Amino acid sequence: MKKHLYILCLFLLAGFVGLAQGKPDYGKITLVIHGGAGTITKANMTLEKERAYKEKLNEALQTGYAVLAKGGTSLDAVEAAVRVMEDSPLFNAGKGAVFTNEGKNELDAAIMDGKTLKAGAIASVTTIRNPISTARAVMEQSEHVMMIGAGAEKFAKEKGQEIVDPSYFHTETRYQQLQKLKDKEKTELDHGSGSGSAEKIFIEGKKFGTVGAVALDAYGNLAAATSTGGMTNKRYGRVGDAPIIGAGTYADNNTCAVSATGHGEYFIRSVVAHDIAALMEYKGYALQQAADEVVMNKLVKRGGEGGVIAVDSKGNVAMPFNSAGMYRGYIKNGKAEVAIYK
Figure 1 (cartoon, rainbow, N blue to C red):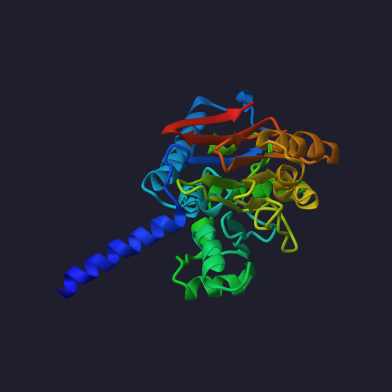
Figure 2 (cartoon, rainbow, N blue to C red):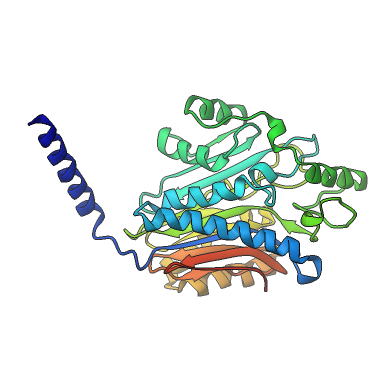
């Protein structure tokens, strides 16, 4: 008798949850991702490199979309997609993070829920395998929005996040990039330029390295997530736009979800992600119009290079960038598209 009553209660609870969220519409679920922008051209890309990036982008898309297709939330989807890219040495996030001037890998990440406007972010961490998951833990399991450094790492450990030795993030290609830049005594974003590396898969000119995802789930909720290793040879605890809500990451069910990639200082000054949402809310711009105005007009005038991915509450997608290329892709109605160049 008790067992039957328990099962009945589960059915009733599921029914109440469904009513609270509304009837799901799986026809509009959408996921968009990026893996960085910059001087990414066909001339700098071998077939091997191109294939590797496209395969990993597609894996991230399929992983996140599978979550949405099973009724998962947009938050679940963007976290899952970003984790795929964090675990790949191809991208400047997680495993593939670049080195600071001190020879460390310092990671930043942020996530935002468009339904509640809650957000979580971490910065300057060195031992958290998947920063995006810890950013979500900050959002859901603390009263704060951002944690940094040792405090963020202590919080991650207490919440059961996967902690790794800093050596996990060491890749020889990234380390050699740092040595070359230190020899030149200059700072360059992400992959840098030049040739001669044994692992030519990374040599593709100046690139702004960040990964991100935005999604619309079957219940009409939006979410955005961004993760990065920052700037090669960066100093003084520099933090870019990725973990800053409104600059590199933003989501609001009333407008759109945005994840940015580019020269972080310009994206912070321009509050890029929120500016796109504000143009939609206050001036009635369509998603593409708002994204183009910010990325192709405002940023260009201010000297900022990079791009964004965005999705609105109707499932419209925008992926503008003012650089030579941007690793990007989206999946809608089960059909995935990935691209690199203009």
